Image (cartoon, rainbow, N blue to C red):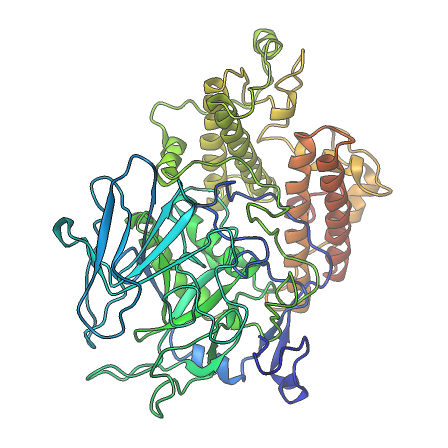
Length: 598
């Protein structure tokens, strides 16, 4: 967090005792992105703070830091879905009507009237007011014809005669935030665009879909009539914020210690798997670890609120609300976030990729503006669970006539979805490999594997590609499809050793006597110890290496994608072994975490 008055990459010595360092400090692999190559669903450029991952050099406020004390006055934050306190979004095109949005009565209005396209049938939003008589009512309309983004505040459909109080437009391919004090892009107190940091329905509703960007949060800054609040916001402004609330200078307001523009995040030392979260809650926690959330506005009491679009389902939002208290107490402010000077928040190696449309993250094809409903296929009725067996001769022969779908076609889009479902299935496979058969974690992973591998086959068939559960995407176009590892085997983890430095290729058999001896003395580190923390890091490195292994399995050896995945695999499997050793656990590259205590 570098203030406008002193943009430096160090933290003042007076705060040294209040800093908690991020760990591990080694290079971390960049897994693929779920974020689509669609500027409406994945807005802003790669230089935007919206897309900047947190780095291994991030320094977090310690427990005694004033910002932490303010944050811990509460125990949870809200999820505001759509209007009036979240954001309503819409994409319009040539077939949508042009209408004039008139200016509401009241002070503080600007930019209206405006004649713009609105969705056919209207953009109808929820309207509500707080105890101060205020409302946000933010609506975003992206016009795909002229690529203009219209932001309206205090917007109401008004029975077909739309009105609003404030209007701005901005570039959806730009930063989404200012670069100098006082520069306003959107209508929020901090000046950021309304799409900056918004949780989108198409990403959080879809199981397995990673949230590849930072989020935004509003925090309490003043007391409400007849209610005293946990004031957290200060009067200070740090990038990417460029402005603040108009009354923030009042003596009795903004008396907290968290500035506008501050980055709050989950330190990487926190074990997400130990928090007992739901599937969407786990993905939210990962986003808070890898990208964090920026403070962009003041509002409400309690622990603040993150904003989401109107497509987040009630079921998902309720799951998040139950999970957030488990995450909340671990979140801390990042103290060395140089938004304008570094591509990685806090410096060091990125914890995750930059997944902007113009970035270098390994993005995949994704649904268009209706994406929030497409994940329903993951629960398609009548789906047949994949079998744990090798394909028959007829099944293998079925793949021999496959040809890759032509780019830009519906078949290509379905094939991209199929590949994504396969990758999610393999992620579940990793969990199965390191959990005890019959346990709740194993059964949940097995159910996810069955569902996703079924959808892999279904979407491949829609793309005109014949596969079975045992045929990975990279084998689908070969004359004789080779089989992939199945959920009950250890093959997918054991064969990783073939690419590990100095490792001996694993055999499809029990480990040798020397290997058995190597793990026979291992015992699980005691919870809460440094050894346990190192073991948790080791497991995380193993998971990252398996993600790279998935990429290697579906890319051509010698290609740039394969070589990049191979380098990431080698690095992470090496760190797996190293951190296991620090934890007092002896492993080799071809031993999964679940085998370490055999």
